[in-house]
Amino acid sequence: MGYKEISLKYGKGAVDVKIDEKMCTVLYPEDLPGIDIPEMEVLESLRNPIGKAPLSDLVKGKKDVVILASDITRPSPSHILIPPIIDELNRAGISDDSIKIVFGLGYHRKHTNDEKKRLVGEEVFKRVKCIDHDIDDCVYVGTTKRGTPVEVFREVYSADFIIATGNLELHYKAGYSGGHKALLPGVCSKNTIEKNHVLMFSEGAMPGRIDGNPMREDIEEGGKLAGVDFIVNAVLNSHKEIVKVVSGDPIKAHREGAKYIDKMYKRVIPEKADIVVASCGGYPKDINLYQAQKGIDNAQYSVKDGGTIILIAECPEGLGEKLFSDWMVNSSSVDEPLKWIKEEFRLGAHKAAVICEVLKRADIYLISSFDRSLTEKIFFKYAKTPQDALDEAIKKYHDPKVLVLPYANSTLPYVEE
Image 1 (tube, rainbow, N blue to C red):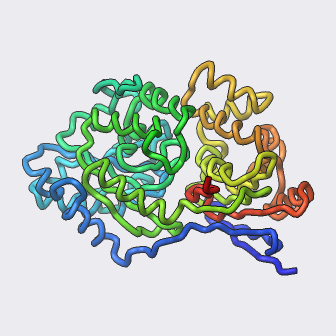
Image 2: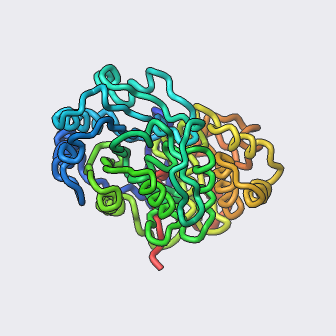
Image 3: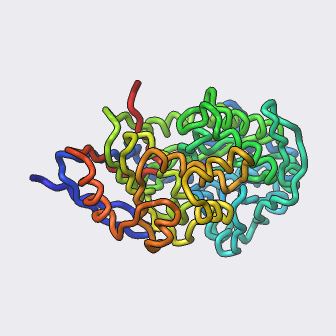
């Protein structure tokens, strides 16, 4: 009987799992090759954007330009995207003093100076003012048709020209990241983020869907109200190499980028599995449980009701967000967060409800840096290694089918209807 040994990313390292080949399918992204000189790809996209004039033409005569950049929890290659943007702005007569980089924290913690430097690169950090979004200093710009009041960080809204950067990937409720998402939730108030996030519990809010996805449609309406002028989005393969950069119109360029994501990460499976072994893909995707939750969400589309998910996520920063942590630790059953979120939507806590939705229909082992008591307190099954969890889970089923997702945070397995 042949065994397959699979290495799965865990934090900045890896763990191995050995599975009988007969029962196992490994579902990798269909990676496109990385580009040899990504900086040239960025420049090319800025000079030949989708649905817009070249960036250097658009910014002529503008007084100040804001570049929105992702925070430390995202794998966006800002250090590659931003230098060519600044060069093009300079070429159009915009000086470094008139450019500001704003890190879209959404509801995440602030950065240290070292983190800011790491995100944009030392030279850019020296040349251009780099600031964090301030969730408490936002101005009202209008209300979406779904009733989300759009309140945007003052420093962003007061700019003459807004460029939104980021990486494009599947998003567990908004369909895809990227595009207007750099603005909403990136640089909005808590009130705005909460109102938009309520929509994640609506019909149609799911990964890989744009049309008829209320959360994504609301985000795009918010971005238009706030006046995002131009986007620069990188599409990364599972090795975090840039395979494509799309720039230009926030909707048209975003849709073009999404096609590349679909090609790589939307993967058809013949049937759902009894056991899904899911690695988030290592650091920073498994920096805490709040981020690692995306791996659970994608895995749920490929596990049978009553099946088992084995989540491999180091979580060196613990559970992550405070309210999420409180709800996970203080609820007495998986039903409580679902009840609480319906009574009052609380940002941060929403991910506890999303995890508990999956826990109601599948067992989930959590292989992490957490000890047994914390793991079990938050309703996961404990095992020391993924192998221990797999050996234990296999005993539950007759002739089980096992699916392995080495990059679960960004692979969307689905059974074609």
